[in-house]
Amino acid sequence: MKKVLLMVFAAGMLAACATPSTEVGTALFAFTQQPMNATETAGTKTGRACATNILGLYISGDMSVEAAKKNGKITKVASIDKDIKSYAVYSEVCTVVTGY
Image (cartoon, rainbow, N blue to C red; front, side, top):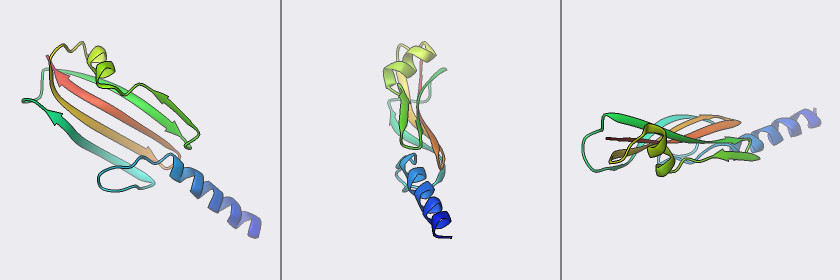
């Protein structure tokens, strides 16, 4: 029984490592969209650039504004937002850029 409890505790601790922090706090499951910057109304084009985190052990991706601009073929930025999806052991944070 002690081994089972120890394994559950260890899994919970590892899951917390893959949980991104948001302005509303940290949770095992999170689905939020957060505004970052806006210079005018949303543009006609949208670009996304994402990074992923698996168990807090492996993080990969380029979530920069420049990568999002390139992905959306945007030259003039209208707004920048952050999109967060977290599933306890896996999370994805994306920068979402709109523009022209």
